[in-house]
Length: 577
Image 1 (cartoon, rainbow, N blue to C red):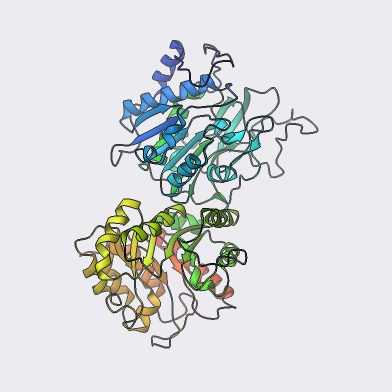
Image 2: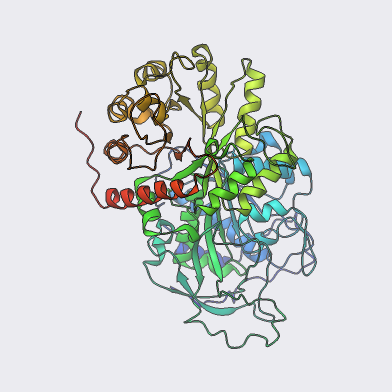
């Protein structure tokens, strides 16, 4: 592999070239790119995929050669491998809402400056990602949507959070800086191209500061500071490249809402697209954002042996907001972070958003208020995969507002108790918006058609897999319903779980730490594992000691971690039917 190759044969494009002009790649460069290109995709696409490649820059044309090489390389290896069909454009109109709908992911190809200035089009891109679309960026994309000067002036703060970083600090005069890249997470599937080995590279190397944080992104590549000569830094750090923690991330993935995000700082020069390892890495990144190559995104700061075990099981634990409904949602976010968890379930009633937003957390909030909530979750490194909607609107237009709200917040599963006659509409909208419907159980007085698992299963019959169960084990246990047998009845119709353990199996039973009561907590998790069930969230809902529950919640998490470590070490053996 040509680790240190400089693009000597590159045509140098003068900065006076307009962004709208179409350029032709240098023939020698293209031959090298074609030779290095992967022969096939790592993953077979689940369906025909479309990738939007956006090449527009404003006020800066220093990356034109790399942009051209990148867009042509992606276009051709999409064709060669069948992984996707690429559309290449510099027209901001492609970000009109109806236009974006035709794509599975957007590749912002080294964009710098206010390439999309219109607020509505920016909003469309944001909601495309939070609703489950993919976003890919390389190098200069970290200063997209800025007012271009040096240093760039921020013009869309949330974009930096969505991407995972802001800025383009690099060492003065070092457009080709030699470094050694370390694989930060060597077993991560997107790093298979590097075969577990560090990787020498030469490029213009960015160093990131806020909002970059390992609490929000899964770092893939970083500068190996032990193998890279950093001794020639300017003594006064005029370049502002130094970090006190020596954490110089070069590539990462993350989720923003339901969206899949991939960013790599490497692509200042076209030679990145003639290296076989980097081309494979970028193709795998494209398949990840398109939705065909599964890869874990738990932020690096949260990775422990137990969390890796939970990733293997396909499980994640989070706090149900009802646990903290005596507090505001913002306080619940803070408490969730204090427990070391990065998932929370939303709640539509009994809880105000914050002192500054004294309203219920629902679809009636303004876009600005939803932005504040997203930023609060981002600052605490907390996601919201599930949301309890107490009331499902009866008419389609109002119901669509609920689903639009869900996609703005990145909700994967609504927990609700709809009427039976609403299920056809909900099934239709669930598939249209990509949000599952988990049917929740209270007792027979509140949920006369949902309180037993057999009832839920009957309502699911003939409907898509986006309709299923969101069982509350507390109610099952108080009513004498065996949670183990219920798993055997519902199987993969279980979409999310509100987990409880009770001190006694009576209507008066109250919550105790998991594994310490009568609720068969371990056996329940074992049964989920036997059936290969992967809930959207295993929700920690603790309905006791409202103001003194933190120590008990910590014990539940400790039990869950120990149990999942043991389960992940065992081979998955599906239960015989």
